[in-house]
Image (cartoon, rainbow, N blue to C red; front, top):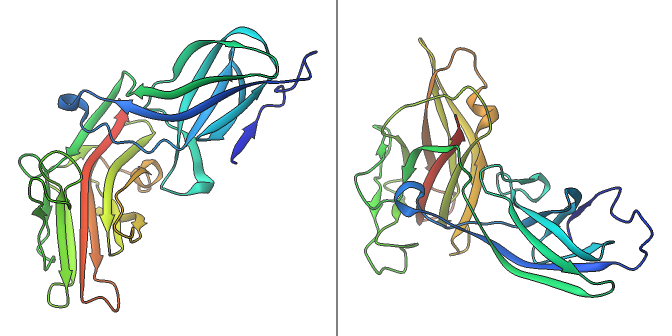
Length: 276
């Protein structure tokens, strides 16, 4: 079990802990302004009365050397860039607060918790493939983005997802967001997306200064064995990698993997999220 412990977790006179169990954390959204409620919250960062007890992999069983009524705060945690060793709390989700009653050597279950996007976030770029395309294929690309059909097993949710088919005659795909977006003055900046792929694909940034552009790969997504996944990609370091840049686009690109005759890449629910 992944856990980061507070040095004060077992301070005080109590020697037999109480326990808090947390089954899962999901989010709720206003689809019109925030898009999909899809999430991949893997960890709970737990505080009791503002004392940090640790970051626990879900489902979690948290020992607490307190009894009686206390304020529980749970901050949703993620794997940054999909990497287990880069777990972090996610600044764009609200902390969950509730009062719990703890009993020594007993278990208090808070069950399945629900968070939401915090106030002050903006999403300058979103693409859910339900309307006018927000991505354009480049002139170099030998294949295009298709829309999956309503009710198709390839569709992640709602009516459509994005789909790219690579084969030996159409072995290179590249696209970029239709619009440029201003680079914010502060980090963090994340890209959220869902994907299901039989082929590796790179996700990155194109940043623009007055006289130059820079194409910066950020993450390469590996095949998912016919499983939809959600990833949170930290764009912050790449966004500020070059001096004088003022705007950016999101790009995707790949060649068909060696030995493959045909590959299918499915994706959905792109969101660039930041705080201005």
